[in-house]
Length: 192
Image (cartoon, rainbow, N blue to C red):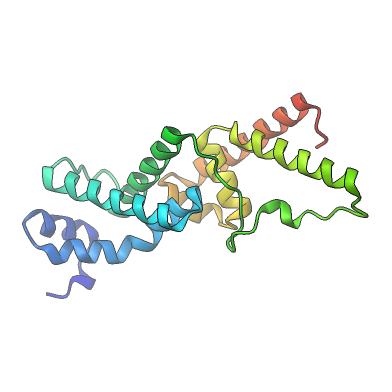
């Protein structure tokens, strides 16, 4: 049986009826999008791999127990499972989300300041720290979209697919993130 031509819905049914190869095909199809959604939040490959494994353990448990309710597509549901486990992990350890680009460089490495003397460098460090702290204060859904859009260089369609929401919801979360960040900056007396 050629598993590559079978829909996700049918693969789920096959796996639930005992066909292990169906699960292997589901993993192969959706590994990249699930892993990317996790990695974008934690920016730590070994940690992302651990959470990815936990994600598929949870998916397998849900499928085997018959608790999988196919309200939407499998891919969107699986990405949400990974994203939710990641958010739970971040909340549990209150770990800072590092804001980096795809090469792992901090976003503040790209800020250019003319004639940086010691005072300018101190001010730059203080501004970086304040901005990071303000971004951390955003609700996780807003912070996630902001990071994916600006530092992950993802389109709103990609963000919607990764987070399992509509494009309008992703756009709304971005708008709220920017508005809330602006309010936080004004309250802190930072220039916009």
